[in-house]
Amino acid sequence: EAQVTQNPRYLITVTGKKLTVTCSQNMNHEYMSWYRQDPGLGLRQIYYSMNVEVTDKGDVPEGYKVSRKEKRNFPLILESPSPNQTSLYFCASSPLGLAAFNEQFFGPGTRLTVL
Amino acid sequence: GNSVTQMEGPVTLSEEAFLTINCTYTATGYPSLFWYVQYPGEGLQLLLKATKADDKGSNKGFEATYRKETTSFHLEKGSVQVSDSAVYFCALSRSGGGADGLTFGKGTHLIIQP
Image 1 (cartoon, each protein chain N blue to C red):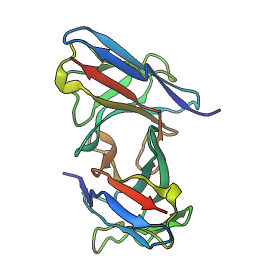
Image 2: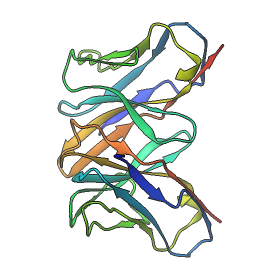
Image 3: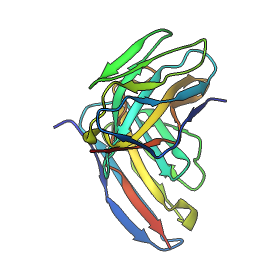
C-alpha cells in the first residue's frame, strides 16, 4: 500500500530532551516536507526537501533540523524541544521536485507534547 | 507574501443542505489551488485541485472554480451527508524563489447533523 508513515504517533517529552520524529514514504517521491498544525493557525511548513541531500527552510524552521540521506526517509529533529513546539506534526511527500502542481500525500500525524 | 483566508467555523448544517465554504487568496504569480480534507484523527487528503484560472476541480460531489478576477476558490456541494463532517483546508502552491510547498488557510470545521 502506498503510504507515508510517521513514528511515533504520540510523544510526551520534557524541555531540552532531544527527539527525532521519523517519516518514511514508499512511493519513490522526490519531494518531502514537514508541517505543524496548531489551532487557529492551520498548517505551516517547517522544512522541505526537493531530493536527496537537498533541504530548505519553510515558514517556521526555528528549533528544528532535518536530513535527507535517503530518498524514502525525512526525519525531523528537535535538538532542544521547548513547550512552544507542542503541536501536531505532519510529514508529506509529492511525486516531483516541484510541488506546485502535484498532490501532496500526508502521513497520519505525530502529536507532540513538550512539558 | 502568499496567504489564504477561509471561514473558520464551525459550520453546522443539516443533512442534504447546500454547502459553501469561502476561500480567498493573495499570491504572486499563478499558483495552483487545492482543497484538502481532514477526517477526525487522520492526516490530510486531497479533495480537489485547479491549476489555472477558470479551471473547475471536482470530486465526491464537491466542486470549486479557480476565479482569478476575484482571487477565490470557494468549495461547494449540493447535498451534504453526515460523512462529510471534517475539517476542510484551502491551500495554494508556491514554487520558485527559494520556496516550495503549500500555504494553508486556517481550516473550516464542518459538522453535518442528521
